[in-house]
Length: 396
Ligand SMILES: C[S@@+](CC[C@H](N)C(=O)[O-])C[C@H]1O[C@@H](n2cnc3c(N)ncnc32)[C@H](O)[C@@H]1O
Image 1: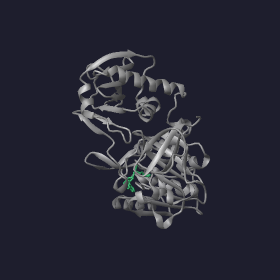
Image 2: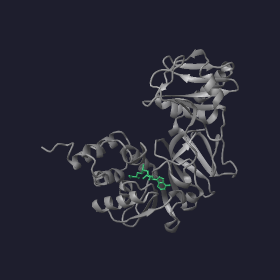
Image 3: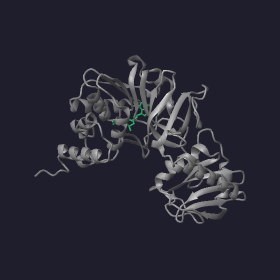
Image 4: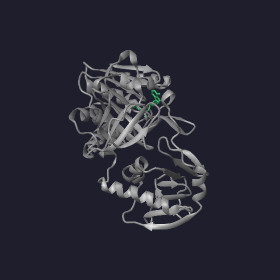
């Protein structure tokens, strides 16, 4: 019997079974595309078992940081379901990488459709072309260029998908969509990366159809956006919401002044920092910020949520005070002279999250308009450079 770990067809079948079991690949066309496309041919030199594991595979690393990867299959499946490409669609993919997702897209749009895929890195595009030829895939129009600008000469597109994270919603992408078209992108919202499928409404507003949590490499080039984190003090970083400018020197000082721990029910998990309560606090509570430390051990005097690569938490800063969500035991810890004021503000945010029905990323509706346009609805407003977002629970 062939070792299922080394036989590509068996490994692929097992991967797809997992994608179906976990509800990532749902529609028959998406399942069929994953079954048909030999992922290992897009990852030459990678062992079959690794090529078909449900993991991202880094394919280009610069100074220890991955600048390209074959994305995690389950996330790709979730995003293809969000994108819903149909036969005959014209699709633009930004972030060609290995070419594997473009190959899946060609199956989904069929011979009457068109897939244009752009990457900023010429060498990656050359490699993607070789992978596609090896897999016998024709019909991907590969381009080298900065996807921040879209690919205007082949526009308009029924679907535009970024397989790379963006800080902003760029007008170029909106301009290159057909009326009613869909833009799917990993978008930074309150410091979290969310895979948002926006439909373009007749009034020009982008309205989300679905939102999921995700974690992608970020855009290079004109759409790179600001750094995701700012230094607080050695070993500590802060992630601040769009437009906020907390006094991080003061935050650094207050970390040495732990005060009272207010115990609360319910333990925090890693995901709570980035989704659910953490995301809500970042979007709705003035002064909210995430604190991240590379220390795997509990820093003395307070406890943060383990993330696998260190510890992180959501905190609220007020003048001369800080309050942070802590775990083990779970609760809210005050820091600094005005720590109790910060605790009250943080607790009000927690109460509001419960009152709203504990929304997570998937429960949110996001509207996007160009920067300076009238607000298209009610909710938390996130001001970007080129766009403004309004975020609220979908059922509100
Ligand atoms: C996660 S990888 C994409 C994976 C790819 N879709 C696949 O199936 O293998 C992200 C890609 O985005 C590319 N990228 C980064 N900035 C870009 C930009 N401004 N325009 C186009 N591509 C960009 C990177 O070079 C990288 O190859």
